[in-house]
Length: 372
Image (tube, rainbow, N blue to C red; front, side, top):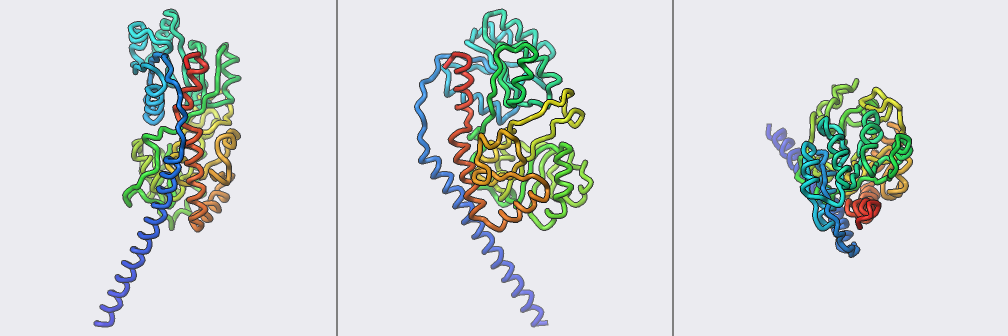
């Protein structure tokens, strides 16, 4: 009986020691990552930009991370910005008389008379601009909306040709960015820590990927967040990892920070697969998640979009996978090569901080409007 008691005690002590070692190691690695990112912040030289004298009326879509990023950038870049309601934007524009009205996306939550209001604002002589950030997944609707605006911006560069074909005279490619007030390196509690994290709706191409990943994930600490993951054939294998439903944006940033590896998989563009893209318009540009994950200073493994190398150095600032098996090989490698994982993560953060801010995007937009 005494020998058994000693055996149990030794196992407990060993377990405590292993837990201590793991905690110490994780703390050291996280400290290195956060310290490196802080060093980048301190050495970054902010360019002095004269503030535009423009007055802008901004109509949000309701995408928290994007709207907040745009509003903050506008507040820093123009003399006055007001936030309008989509329901009464015409009245607010007539009262405020801005130099331009900027509408985010103009889809989903906008009222039926939205286009009539935009036409009325244009008749007042106020320039109007729209920034599409769901292309090409909603082209059935966006091609109807776009011609009602003086200026059309889209995060998807293939759609430039599409909007010009329906009569839009001023069409520009404007990628999205990271809002650093939400997405940034931060320490997080243990409940946010994982080996592998993916947050997003279970579009069918994502379901197919995670069905193939399911056996590999079994002995890992994993978070899969978002809706409709019960679509998976292998759902019983991953259900213990799934946080079903919407995860608030600040919580998403914490999960990104707590993960060793964050997976990014763009949704498929085909008509009839969770899309309103009846013309099967293709995509080359990267999603906002690409910038947001990188802004948290952790390693991102993403599928390929042809625009990606213009924003990040593949293999140095971001990792790219070409199949489920390739992704497994990459995850296995970086989970066992922590220094390389952290160095790539920090380089991705540095590139995002330098080149992919909403202030940079808004300056370009104002330049196109002749308001910088």
